[in-house]
Image (tube, rainbow, N blue to C red; front, side):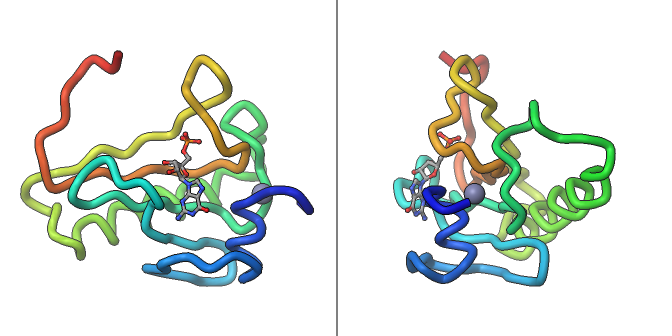
Length: 114
Ligand code: 5GP
Ligand code: ZN
């Protein structure tokens, strides 16, 4: 999608600090980290939000979560854990309308969210 910042990152038009890339997925560090480890995993396909998923996306989302877990473990969170977050639309606090899973780790995180 032309004016989507994460599509531009996926297409290489905007630089990012990449952790992982394959034909379907990209993982990169968040610009404004909220924890010692904070990265995003996105599908390269433009899906605006969780509310836009359909059943055909189930394998892709499974791969995305599996990759998020694998990278979190590789980056030191296997024992301590991490938070895997997908914000959705206005009430969910989504600011970039391209589906992404945040992975936050390296410190204990509070709950519930504010
Ligand atoms: P949301 O609020 O939509 O759940 O999360 C969007 C995230 O994308 C934010 O944590 C924000 O810091 C991050 N972000 C926004 N623009 C960029 C960018 O150009 N590069 C990177 N690496 N992260 C970005
Ligand atoms: Zn996009």
